[in-house]
Length: 259
Image 1 (tube, rainbow, N blue to C red):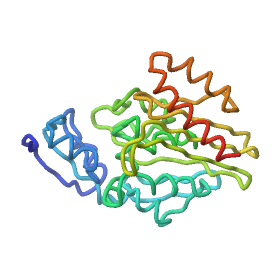
Image 2: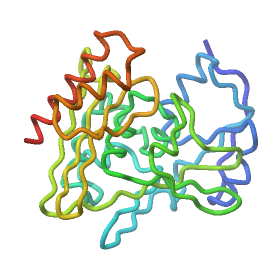
Image 3: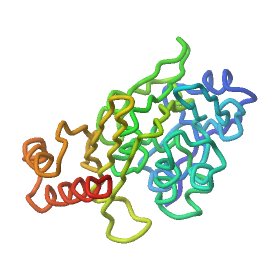
Image 4: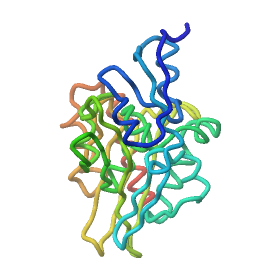
């Protein structure tokens, strides 16, 4: 199939881009999520607003405790170490496992978050890192934790005229450790189960995530694999035993890697 007819605009600046995002207009940067939906006519926007060259969406701002990344930065920029990484290599590792290189060259971190596929790598890993999604609209900017920004599978808080403009990621301390494990049928495919864990004792942080669950990934309160397995059973009792086992395996292997 081919997309339904739509208008196309390439605004000169971000203010004009926000103005162009009406109720049924969609922003496009890398297009790695939106284009297939257009071709299948699962998305039928009246207009596409091209934001991929917006300078503000490519900027990086560093502070002593966090790094803010522009939403239009491609996955490959993280994979290649072309941007600073305050996560002690976690973001670089995660980016390198996203789909295939052609996708990573064009797909963007902001686009992945806005698409909100539960099996996407950034959703789970950035939740473990306690990142904030920066959303801008006519009323200004709002920073959302991942699990507040994402309301469900492919559903976010974004409203008409709002755009993901960046993501702010806390810096890990020198003592921090992390692990990321996902189960895929083969390399490049979407994950069947994901677990991400960040332990940063200097900051009093321990965050263990269960992801790729067809909904918003969630933080586990458990601190060991056995307790995590029991918590997963309690949280995901409506999933089949085989599915729950995948999540428990991903969590266990992430915990083993952390140790």
